[in-house]
Length: 310
Image (cartoon, rainbow, N blue to C red; front, side, top):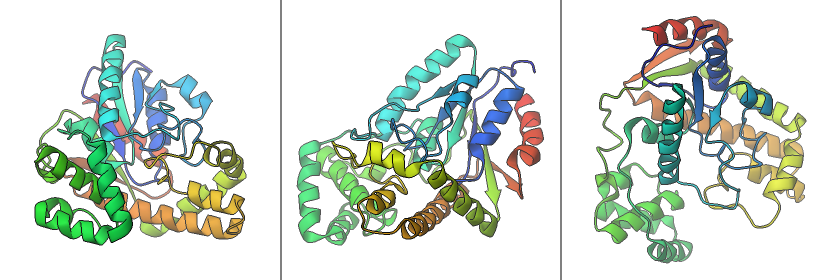
């Protein structure tokens, strides 16, 4: 129960429902001094608690947490915002003599925290014009334009992902530089001082865990949460509206689908999210993987404590 020795930050990553948060809390309980930093793109929104699997108030009272409940659902949130807030968090934790423990499944946010990405600015008028074009011409037309201007960026974006295509073209037209030209590139993994560990499950087991968690969220009052926060005015921002499950629950509350159909759709989307997360994380050779069969705390915590002591 001694404070953790001075050492590099730690990151626990993996797909949704893999048990990252429970493992991080278990480590912090065993070794006081850790402060958890969420690298989750949706837990920054106030009121989106159940559907984002946000730590409970009791857990947050027990162990310091950062980058939770930062903005309202109608507000935009970006990787640049994350980096700005991270600077303040790092200074505060260092002053207390704490040790950073990053937890989350948003791969780009983790890279921003670990690698300090060189991020482009924003050009709202350019973006608005591109969004108007996308609404008329369709995202695939803009994707072809991106492929001609920045083939590397286009290769990383699905042809129907309007938001990411518009963002890449916004940077190209606004800055005069390719979107892929910022920073060392997401396909490079330079040495860093953050120890990164990942939780890996068999696919069928993880899918069962996802389904169980979605049903548990519904039983915990997710519909009431959506009614209070998501369905109220002003509407959610473009960055918040992609939160998995909230649109489906809102559709149910509006009478557009049954609760059973909404739950089924959420489970499918969450499984797809988990698959994308694993594809992202598997590309990073710096992550040390631990296979989990049943309980990440029982199976991984002893190895993790030994790892952070070295």
